Image 1 (tube, one colour):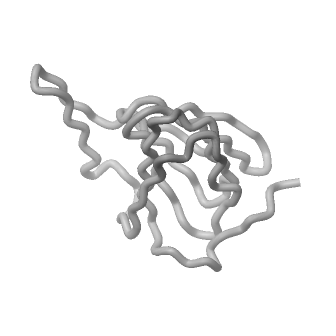
Image 2 (cartoon, rainbow, N blue to C red):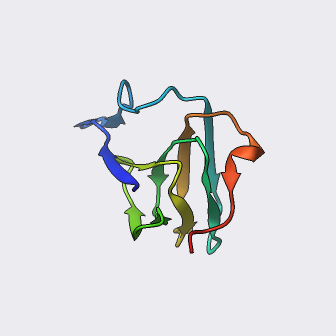
Length: 121
């Protein structure tokens, strides 16, 4: 099942600096971000191999995950939280705030054959 990783953050009067160095359990091969999603839903799939680290760097978004055994809704509302999505986590991103920016770091390059669009029964 998906799980949170706390991102180490250094705060002072100049602002905050959050660092992902040596934190993720994979080498980053793909980076993308979702913005301007408004009331849309994104995702609606799981993967055969890819692991993803999701960080809402601005605003908030909810991610519903279903691993075939349990279904959990996660709230991402801080750039200091990273939600790890395992390949078996069928996920839907929803309830994007109007200013949400969701950063995704993936363990694999894009490969359409890695996607499974059928949810668990």
